[in-house]
Image (cartoon, rainbow, N blue to C red; front, side, top):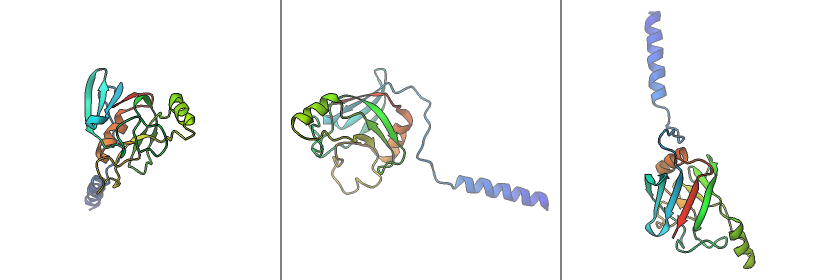
Length: 166
């Protein structure tokens, strides 16, 4: 009888562990992402290993997607070379990875206008924010689905260059 109880308890533990929620933190052991390219006009983001695209994503941008971001609140996504500079596991958009905007030149341009360049530009998920909104719904960030940001978050490291192209 004791053996039956032990087996039943083990079976219950295995069953309950299988019912647990899936973690949003994925592991990745493929080729290193050496750079990211965002093609704003095509609404595409490519994770590259050297010159080979290892993942491609459809993206959403800010409501004014064309042109370089100059000031806070302009609804634009920056253009140029930046770097992944932080990771936010507690993002209100599921998960996010930060982009090093503004750089010193961006700050200088905004100051010349007497304004702030803004900041907090990320690649992030949706977490329900995109529902019922147009394709370009962010405040200037790059949006992918929650499942996709889980992949991006696992694959991309701080210091990875990101080329934001028109």
